[in-house]
Length: 122
Image 1 (tube, one colour):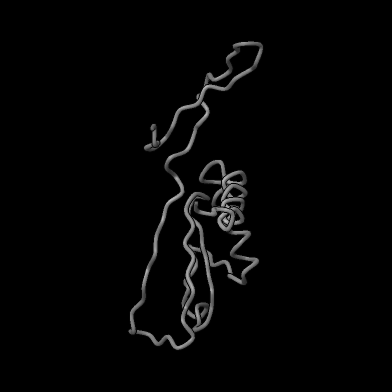
Image 2 (cartoon, one colour):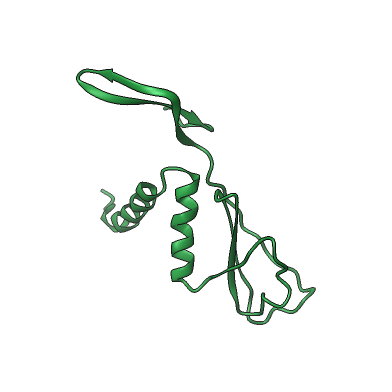
């Protein structure tokens, strides 16, 4: 029989992240806090990065509070050497509260929600 207990700490961390990140806005804020704790510096998208990004630096910027771009520059980086990108997204799936969402059933107040993006329904 497989002992899954070794995976419990990772699962608990994942649950903490999901609890703190119920939508794209919160997911970005949660990640910004983690990045800043790890020494990343915020860049402003509307300002030139020239002179601010240096070899060995760690940086991030946001777009519309729902998109986060973070990157680290290798210590041996030289202009023209190329780079690698890893991407992900925060917007799908998530639950969005409907405009007229208040409902009652079985003595409980409920909120009507809709799933944005593709859910796994099985």
